[in-house]
Image 1: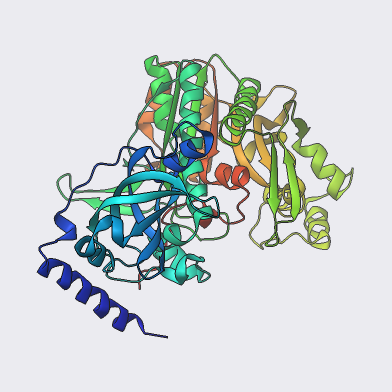
Image 2 (image 1 turned 180 degrees about the vertical axis):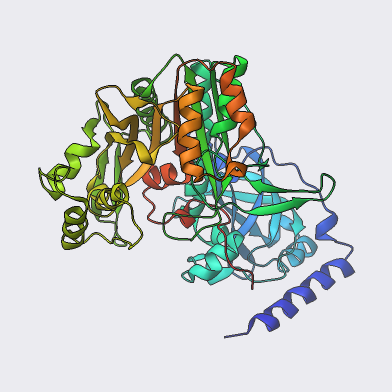
Length: 487
């Protein structure tokens, strides 16, 4: 097997030969009238008749030399089509130029549609233009990449080699498109809020820190969108949403990436029930429009279905405390904190020495209950300590009007009835800040004092939503360029 350096030199020699003939691939232009896959599909459906003339452009993904004739596959985003180059049709000089082509090169071709003896839709070439010379050979002879380090670090090779990967990324784009359509149809206003913030708020997370030279002060990449959205509710924008990047300087895992895409939406005069309906309608609408089904199948390496998620409406609702009692005992909330800690340990939940009592209960939920919630479930009425920006439940002031939508064993979306009492909000944020006044976002609290309407709000992790809808087990497989340590 030839090494890569040798193949690169051979390709450079072909480029030099082309330039010696007066052909510079990188200076050529070509305008296709159809996509490669589009031309094939129209020919197969009868929309284009045999002998119809077409022009397509794309990358060469297969090359078969038959002596006085050659076959290549040309692929673009729409798909691929086979092209047939015949010496008698092209002439000696143009056919000789054709021999300088390699896998990975970009070409524009013009010719007529026909079917080969094996009934393969093809283009019989009348002319072609070399549009870019690939100086490096494509990966794994187009059979895919197995080295995950290369796949994530050099995503362009992954997209070139793996059509399934490209399909996932294109569907991710379609999912985001349909999310926007959903909110626009419901008269929500799309907004943009600061990515750099003087005080990172809206969540409990470690931010990335930077310094603004002109202003002479520290800034932080945002960890959440929420507090600026509530300022907009105060200002009179009653229904709003944003799809944007959040950043958290924390660990990487199968479900976590330091830079991630978040949707947040707020509806004045709504509450957590309003937002549960919104989440359910949004996800089912997007699934139906992008995937054409509400049954999401996960398959193993052999293609066998190992799990099916049913998104059919009327999703299950269950109170947080009821789920804890089912798993950890009916008396869980009556026994002492020490007894809860011991029982959690006995059940197999990992409990840190510094955990507060509510965190012990949270560990039971996160480690032992949430992973079992494969089918869509709204877990409601969470402990008040977990969500300081939500309103207390009137029938149980130890909980808040909050839900976590869990699907496929992970949280997809939190939502709640937003706290709009400025005095109560200041009290909970001061408690969360542990008395450190500099951590309080005074501008946000001042905004609330001007009056915020009652409202419901949601957040949806776009990456996790895509993981669930597209049957992917790692967040890295739905992000084009996941974070990696530089070489």
